[in-house]
Amino acid sequence: MGVDGEGNPQVDFEGNTAGPLSARTIIPMSPKVLADATARRPGAVLLFEQDDLSRPVLIGLLQPASTSPLVEALLSGAADSESALDAHVDGRRVVLEGKEEVVLRCGEATITLRRNGKVVIRGVQVETHATGTNRIKGASVKVN
Image 1 (cartoon, rainbow, N blue to C red):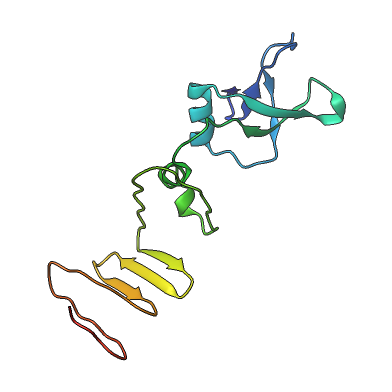
Image 2: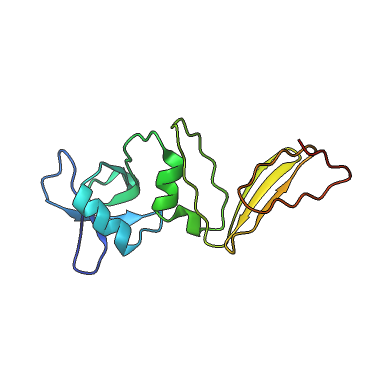
C-alpha cells in the first residue's frame, strides 16, 4: 500500500509483475487514512475490474483484531460522524468521551453527561451517591 504523487492509493500484490498500481476505491479514504496505511502497511482487500489484474479496486484495509473496538473507534475519529456506533467491549475499563454530551440509555433508564459538568439521571428507580450537593427530583424520595 502506498500513495502516488496525486495522493491516490497504490497497491502491489502477489503475482503482480508490473510494480505498484494505482487503485480506484469504493470507500472514501482521507489523506490521513492513506498516510497511516502507507506507514502501517496493512493488508488490502482488492477486487479487479473485469478480472483485469492491471485494474485493482481497493475495497478495504485489513484491521488488527481489537480487545477494545469502541475505544479505538472513538480515538480514530469515528465518533465525529453522525452515524450510530455499535461495539462489544470485553475490557475491564472503558473511557467514553463526547465533545458536548454523552448519553447512556438502557430501556427506561438514561444517564446524560454534559460538557458543563451537569449530570442528568432518569429512571423508574434511581439510587445516587454524591460528594457534593445531591438534588433529587421525583414523585417520592426516600433518603437512606
